[in-house]
Image 1 (cartoon, helix red, strand yellow):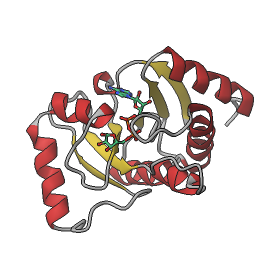
Image 2 (tube, rainbow, N blue to C red):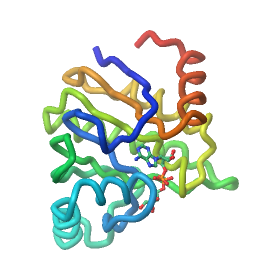
Image 3 (cartoon, rainbow, N blue to C red):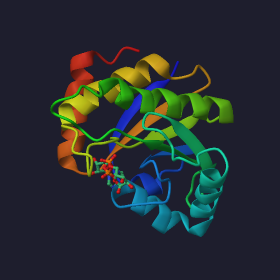
Image 4 (tube, protein in one colour):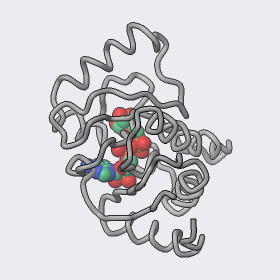
Length: 176
Ligand code: AR6
């Protein structure tokens, strides 16, 4: 059974098997958590991302999918990059956001990761409202965590995100 935990902190500091990156389809870096991961992880991650663009993802990583690279100098073994959907008032993209978590965990399972750290995908630059994103994220992880995964750790950047995730988590009932 996977233990879902919530902490407030910086995902680049997590000593886990894999950390999930809220990337974009280009896989070539950006701001937010993506920028922090590439900055602290060093150039090896970008090199592998470029190689993925040249081979499997010539048109980019579609939103809702996930792919792993080395974690470079980070204290993790792998970075699992996923491209979240941009929030839209007019179109329901919830399933794409849920798919980011399902696919990231599927990749984690394939790698044999036992501990994974996850950010609140799409809640920064992509503007997804926090409470709704938290419900989607927590539900998807609870439903899709592979049996081999001991811990899925949400790493929330700041008090607001942490507070919202904690409240939604309690509302869902902590029982897995
Ligand atoms: N550790 C944990 N969470 C973080 C960190 C960190 N070091 N830094 C930011 N966050 P965002 P998105 C939180 O914008 O909305 C990038 O340019 C942040 O507070 O990183 O999916 C990509 O290249 C927020 O709650 O990702 C894409 O172009 C959450 O991580 C685009 O932004 C996600 O915010 C993706 O946008």
